[in-house]
Each structure stands twice: as structure tokens, then as C-alpha cells.
Length: 420
Image (cartoon, rainbow, N blue to C red; front, side, top):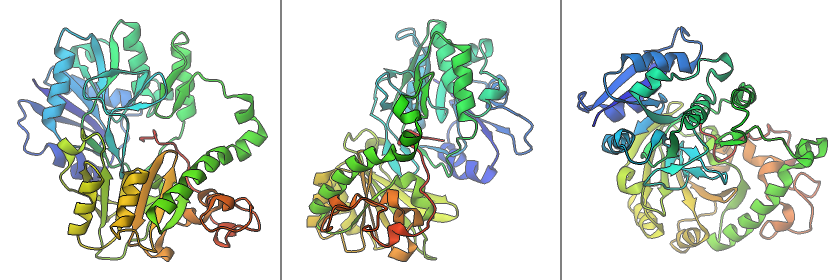
């Protein structure tokens, strides 16, 4: 089996650190890297650039991939490529991350510093695929190219392509590909226009669930109202505050915040000479079995070491064997957090983070070096639900902490499925 990786890039340093390094040493007879230089903005759409790369490719399967992706296993990539070439299954498009009919992210991968997605060792049919990495047979994409529509310039082109191939009788699926997506930004510019264009092109296919929302869905009256737009976050905040209280009790120490660490990790101030150690707990074992070895990457010039372990026992053993310094543990559950607390690994400086159902822990960083967004009202659990809090005032009220009442920038938005 052989694959041509096609990547359009605008930052050579990012591409060299991630994608190039991950395939260095691969046999070009089986894994070919085709790079399309767009540093001069010659291509105005991703579709035009990737179609150009597909025409240059030499192998029968093409994998379109972002420049900031690290492939932990080219063997796994070849296994998935073989599924496209096989007659069984009827697969036309397979990718590293998709969204199923129920709205769940399918495909286990590391997005920035956290594992996301439900593991799919075998392909699972999905509504749509994310653009981060997806595979198609070269003869298919030459016959049916990616859209070069300006409204789909840099968003939802894989979503549209999946809808189109499904209309041609092919199946679209997500599958584990063991990748780390070292994204530095969340670029949502013109996303709404892209979703609207997909709905225009395929009115009979909507609604389509994606990693960035639902194409063709009409917002409910409450969400679209002024009250909903202003206060809709409070419902999620209440649920996360309940989890935060239980998490703080199980850990025995630490300060809870409500935040998506993937969006805020680059706002942690790192002291010169330090490196941030990131440990992901992979309860399934599917990611850690392939990508468990330490991976050295930089984010905005700061050094990170990322490793995946299978369970809390492995996590405790790993942490005890490592040197002290900034430490971020993600994908924890309450039992795992309790294990860390019982092992004395949750100190008074620890931050316990809650985002939707995700729990993470940060230690070894002084309070004055934490992201300012974690001091805003939305990041502070409801005061009535904070451990040891007196009274029943809500976040942002006069009874909240002085820090939460400071005029600080609001935390950046984004859900757990955002991969851009």
C-alpha cells in the first residue's frame, strides 16, 4: 500500500517541526510528501491548492493534511489507506476526526494538549469529517475535485466533499489515525458563510453535524434571543460548577476553574529554561499504544513534552519518575484525580480545570503566571458551589472573589470539537 500526503502550507517552520519530522525516514515508495507552497497566497482556496497537489501525487491514495499535524504511525496511515482500496465497505472518504449523527466527535486524536474524540479502531460512519486529515483515492479526487468555491476557501471543504461523495453512493467514515494536531489558533473567520454555502449546495442533506457546529440548523428561540445570547453560558456553567465541587473534594486541594485548557494553554507564562510536561490519560489504550512515547514540540517558541499513559496507575508512576516543573494532566476522571491527591501530587498551587465533561490539572505554575482569562467571571465556579464558599451569590456578583470582578478580557470561545 502507498499514500501521498498532500499539504498546503503558509508557515514552513510549523510544517517542518510537525508534518515533515513525523514522516522523515519514510520510504518514498510507500509514503510520499507533496507540499504546496502558499506563502505568497497564490492559491485563494484550500481546494485549489489541494487539487493541485493531488495532480502531482504519485500514489493511489491521497491524504490531505494540515501543516501542524504530527503522524505518530505511518503504518497506521497505510492500514487506513488500504481500506479505501478494498472493495468491501464502500468507503469513499476516511478521516482522523468526524462527527456522528448524535453529535459526538469520532476518532481519537490529540488536539493541542488534550485527547479528544471517541476511539474508532475500525471506521465509523459519520455526518462529516474535519479538514485536519482525510484520505481519498486519487482517481476519485481527480474525477471529483475538492470544491474551489470562495465561500469554502478555508472552512468546511471536507464537510462539503463528504456530502457530495455520499450523494454519489460512497460512505464517509472517521477512524483512529494516531495524530497530534499542534494547532496554535482557532480560526473561525467566515465559518458561518462556509456552513451556509454547504447548505445551499446540498439542501437535501442538511442538517449536517460538524466539529464546528451544525450546518442547516436553525437556532432555538431561547438561544437566538438577547437573553439567550447574554446568559446562555450560565446553564453550562452550573453543570461544570457541580463537577468542579466534586473534583476539588476528591483531589483534596487546588483551585477550580471552568476553562478549555486547549484554548488557554499558550497564555500560561513559562519561565525561561522550563518546559511544560503534558500527560494525557488514555482510558481506551488505543492512542497510548501507538503514540505513547514522549513527543517534543514547541508552541509559540515554548518547549512542550507530550506523553500518553493508559490509566491513573501509569500516570502516578510517570509523574513520580519525572523532574518537577509545569505539569498539565488532561483527560482525568474523578477517580484518577483522587489517586493523584492521595499520592500527594496535588499541591496548594494546583489548578483543577473543568470544561464540559473534561477534567484537567495544572501544577507548578505560580498564580501570577496563569492566564488572565481564568480570573474572569465565566471561569469562576458559581460561588454557592465553590468548596468552602459562603453565601449563595453568583459569579460576577458583589459577593464573588475580587479577581473575578476585575476588568479582564473574556475567555476565548470554542467547543471541544473545534480543531482549527
